[in-house]
Image 1: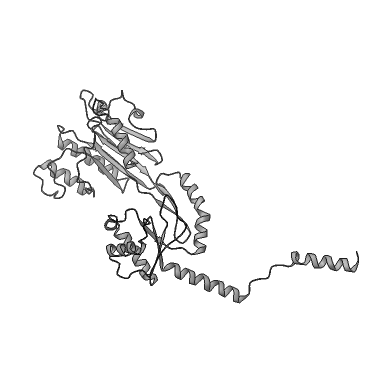
Image 2: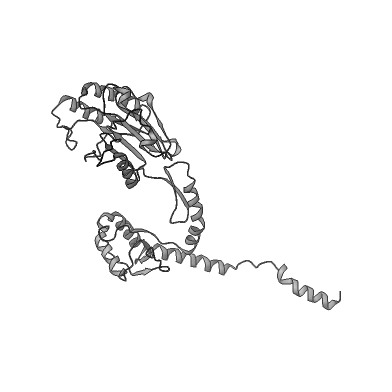
Amino acid sequence: MSPAQLAATNLTSSPQSTPAQPSSFADVVKTSIRSALEEDKAKQEVIIQRLPENNRDVADVHEICAKAEVIVKPTAVTRLGKSHPNRPRIVKVTSPSTFDARTFRFKVEESKATISDSFPNICCRPARTRDQQARHKTLGPEVYKLNQNAKSGLESFSLRPNGKRGCSNKAVKGLYLNARSIASVNKSRNKLVELRHLLSSFSAQILAISETWLTDAISDHEVLPDSFNVYRKDRSTTQPSKRGGGILLAIDTNIESNRRDDLENDFVIIVFEIICERRFKIAVILCYKPPDSDSASFNASLTTILDNVYREFQDVCMLGDFNLPAIDWRHPDRCSRATDSEFVCITQSHSLEQINFNPSNAI
């Protein structure tokens, strides 16, 4: 190879072999300052999702401020992204300061009930920097896959505003009703169809029913879909000579649960446990007290069950039909009958509080 060819070869290959030059100190400082400024700017911004597009964004945001009692008004309101036929674009709301942005978001979330009359379904979140947005796009499919493969129906994965992955417990929806025969079918009503419609409408994961009127001639899958684990105590097992009665507890198969018949007795009571994240357990007790049953015997039986349950569980939910219409749960201390007062004392001594004041005869 001639000297000229060798020189040409060296000149041609030199760009490939030269290592990349490290960033100068000045470049690093510029990048850090730019990133800090962008982060500070994002902290002054709030993103509103699902706000309808009607060419009056500024007026809508000011109305939201008025309903949420936000004193400091935003300095700018901007729609972001490309128009979509099926959903409104997000709205960026810029506040004068980071504190004002946090206040805006807090007050809007706190006043959702008031705001929902005019702007249903809107929600707020912090704005993101470009780096955080890129991280969300990268981790989004991963979080979706985690939620699809979640072992427990009580776990939910999400992306937090800072771009980190989070895991939390999901709220569980429960539905309770007194059915007076869920298998009843006649010319005007089909209660099994109505029951499945209720389940679909409420997206309930736990279903509790008293007065099922079921017998062993009716199987679980005739009553509920296979997506539920069903626990029953029919009257045919407690009082074979009588019709009616009976209770049923059903729980979504995605939620780990076990029946605890070792904590039950001959009364119409079912006990089961829900197993949550980190093996945390909740006891659920379903009761039915027939109107003609002996209240003193029922109270004694219930006391025994609650005592045994509380030896193992800290969190307990009890529901059912106790046929105690004389008790006013808004004033439980004003009972006219001794057995009613005794029942109230049983609930209070076991730290149980009434949370439902509405009729439960749903179907």
